[in-house]
Image (cartoon, rainbow over all chains, first blue to last red):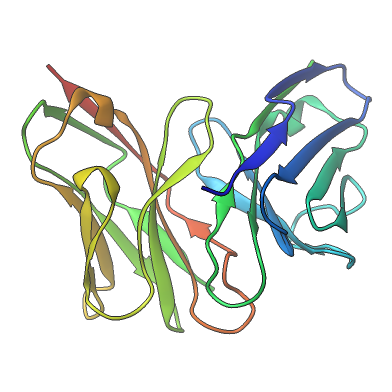
Amino acid sequence: GAVVSQHPSWVICKSGTSVKIECRSLDFQATTMFWYRQFPKQSLMLMATSNEGSKATYEQGVEKDKFLINHASLTLSTLTVTSAHPEDSSFYICSARMGQGRTPLHFGNGTRLTVT
Amino acid sequence: AQSVTQLDSQVPVFEEAPVELRCNYSSSVSVYLFWYVQYPNQGLQLLLKYLSGSTLVKGINGFEAEFNKSQTSFHLRKPSVHISDTAEYFCAVCNAGGTSYGKLTFGQGTILTVHP
């Protein structure tokens, strides 16, 4: 089946540094990718939607200058948390789908970010 | 705006007993409905989804769910659970049609614990 690889699976960084998370579709062309954030003991919240070659669309309340999303190819999207702070510590998950319509959604295994 | 409510945050059950995880949603437009399972520190695995057609949907691992439009519910059921079903379960919705497919609104999650 289709696989989405997310890397790294966990990362610890110091406050003020930037962290890049990669989401790759291994065997299909991901025209659309979604980024979610999951705080401890809470549900997943959609952060942004990215279409290949276009600027990402951010959900209300998500700072686009802090969470930089790049979707430059059909197999790779990246989320960069800039100037990370402890409150950014969370579980970040991407999902991807190919084409238009009701094509299957495939989730990565997530990245646990801890900012100290 | 949409919202999803999972009525039970935790459900303990004995092995081989039946289980129902409840999900209600609110939306001003037609929706698609999904159930996902998440094991610790992992991504999401799709159990089943309702897009159209029969309101009784069968998924993987013996799970099924019934879409009830009048009650705006999509409860997940399994007639006999196994220890390996211990995990967190998420109900999710997205707008039917348009370009919103894949932009999921998740419920708060239900932790299912199966005891021997």
